[in-house]
Length: 263
Image 1: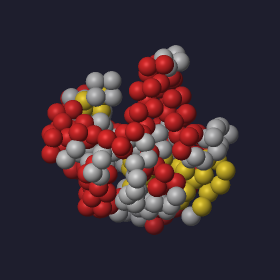
Image 2: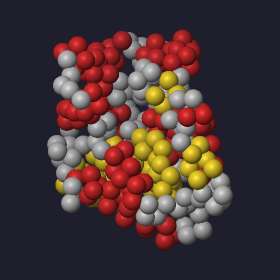
Image 3: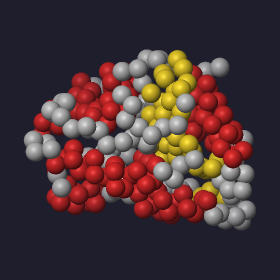
Image 4: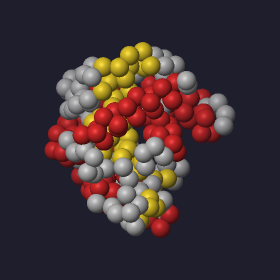
């Protein structure tokens, strides 16, 4: 059994447990994990298996547009121009999509949002895939899904050093507490894929980029990636230390192999 298949089977077990408890409606299952942990791939594997019928979309699919993030950057802090941290997602869209899937009938057609990372813009709604019918389970994955507000402290990296007065970090904590926590509370269960260290997260993200490009990263691309992942470091480290509300924690080694499962 491959590593991603092992993770998918663990998630499937959680889904089946929740379906037994909520047989009258679709179950809502979250899959959290650091960048490159394999969460989206595991969800896609389950979606293709069609056992039961899954609808799947991601926190990455509901990013605000560049213009909307620029407005956030002007209002709060320039670092919000970069997508990823809490505050850069359209949670109304996420909630509305979940609600539509929950009330779907056998004849329903529900558009699932998509974001074009190459353009750094949401895809036109006319291009969103259509989910037909009523799902038995809704899978939603995201890097900070289930995260609780991290403690503040001295800057962890050069990106955080730009946030000299802590406005960016504090705003993320407020967003997590006021906007993201109510979304997380809707889930029947959240599965967290826990990395073995922060350093491996950067390696995984680099491998992910190289795979998308079909080649090794250049020195310039690698430097840009180093800076990009710094936006995620504080919350990722906090989640690794227990700062989350996940129901199931799947511990992964550096090669994404399952080391253990805790509930």
